[in-house]
Picture (cartoon, helix red, strand yellow):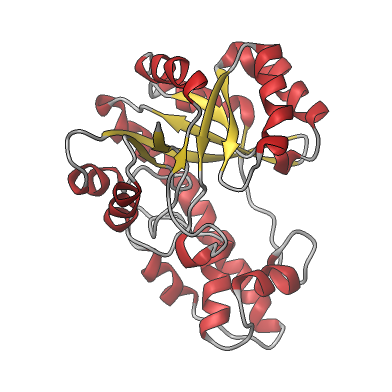
Length: 278
């Protein structure tokens, strides 16, 4: 089965609008699609209207949380229609904090001799969008201060770099409560970013019963060897396996298109898990 359950648009840190991401996924032949912008579901209607009815389209997002000082991203799928408005109101507070963080980053860059216009960047993000470091990185590139988004992070924006500003994030427990309260099923995104499988196992030991019941074992840049440890974690904790490309457009050029081919042996359980949302 071809699907896309992890991708981003201009509503957060991607370079293409929601409808364009959806159409590119359709060109690849996806049968199941979910736009997972950071901390917003604002692009859902655009993706739903861009895709034919034969494609199942979910409302979802990638929720930014923290556990023991580590960033933990939660993929949330199948948010109920009746819960979407209330959820967006709750997410708006998170997005305001992200905008304040962006302004603080821009101020630091100005002190480093690289002036940028924070208002201009936030206007590009747009209403309901979720501002983040990738938007600043793109602005640095446009202004000629760096040659690429990757260079912007490596020199200035990554954790511990001169313009880094820590963000305020939900705890994993609070993020799960927010997502589950909106009827979503929740999976851990790109588990490799947490460092090692022991940390991932501890996360599921602590939070599986609260609704962290999925793991993104098939990720755009994973080969079979990279997926193997996360499949073992899935077996240990009886988790549903998910997958996606993490497409960002030109903001993450190594992922050339949205969509992955998902293994048949995991498809039935995934679809049943998604059916249980809301």
